Amino acid sequence: QVQLVESGGGLVQAGGSLRLSCAASIGSPMGWFRQAPGKEREFVSSISGSGTYARYTDSVKGRFTISRDSAKNTVYLQMNSLKPEDTAVYYCAAGSVGTSAQGYPYWGQGTQVTVSS
Image (cartoon, rainbow, N blue to C red; front, side, top):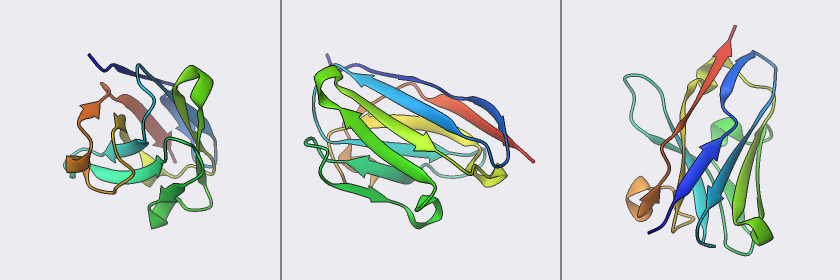
């Protein structure tokens, strides 16, 4: 059974940084999504299994960086210059590099990120 375990969420002031981690039981393309209260789950970033390809939604380009440590089957999301609108539950997902949540068969439990103004 595939397991994804996220960590690293928390409360930070606007302009601050957080790094999310997702430890996976498989090596595969991975993605990060987020869901704010009352909103649909949205794509944030994804990375190929080799780590050579990454993509980002426009609102986080230049602020967030996705990376992976293949030896540890762990994917990271470094989030800098955080804004209050980044507040959401962040989910790690495995199985695709696409922007649609439907393309990912495996999901973590989510970690809360709260950015105060």
